[in-house]
Amino acid sequence: MKKYVSILVFAVFVLLSAFRLPLDGLNIGDKAPMADIKMKDVSGGDYSLFDLKEENGLLVIFSCNTCPFVVGWEDQYPLLGQITERNSIGMALINSNQAKRQGGDSFEEMVTHAQVMGYNSPYLVDEGSLLANAFGAKTTPHVYLFDKDLNLIYKGSINDKYENKNKEAEKFYLQDAIVNMMAGKNPNPAETKQMGCSIKRI
Image 1: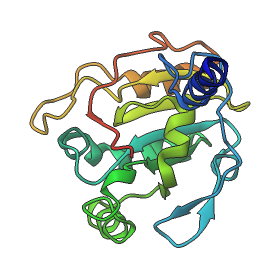
Image 2: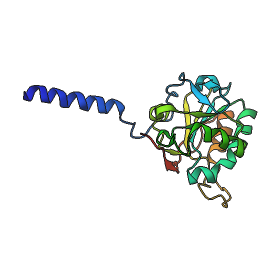
Image 3: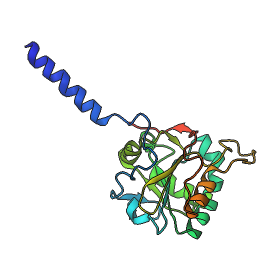
Image 4: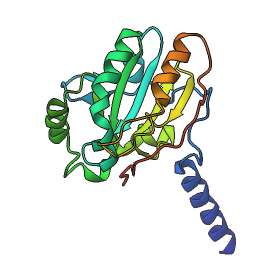
C-alpha cells in the first residue's frame, strides 16, 4: 500500500511541476514561446505572435483594462504603436486576466476599452493565461521585446513613469531598447524591474 501511495505522491509532484511557472520567466536570448497559438483580437480576428511579428521583431505587452499601473501607462500604447510601425516591429497587447473574464476584463469590455483609449495595435485574449504562463509573465504591464528571429532582447518596464499619470518619465527603457536594437546593438539595460498588478490567473 505504501508503495502505491509513494507512486501517487510522486505522480502528483511531477504533474504540479509541469504546470509551475518559471521562477524568473524568459531569459534574454530565449525564443518567444507558443508563438503559433491563435488568440482572439478585439477586431474579431484571430492572430498568433508569428502572425504579428514584422520584419524587425515583435513587442509583446501583457496588459488589461483595470490595473492602476496600466491606467497610468496606457496613454503611451498608441505612441509605442507608431514607433514600432515606423521601425517595422510588430506589437501585441495581451490580456491574460482569466479570473476577471466575467468582469472588467471580459472580451466585450476589452473591445470598448481599446476604442476609448485609441489603441492602434492588436489587443488579444489569452484564454486560460496560457501565453502568460509560457512567458512567466507576472504583472500588467510586463514588457517583452523580441528581435527579427523572435529572440528576447529586452524585458521589464516601459519607462520609469509607472502608475503615476502626472509624472513625466525620465528613463525610457523600452524606447531606448528599440533604438539600440535597430542600430544593431544590445539594449542596455536589457532587463528592468517590471511594475504592476499581478496577472489574475485561475
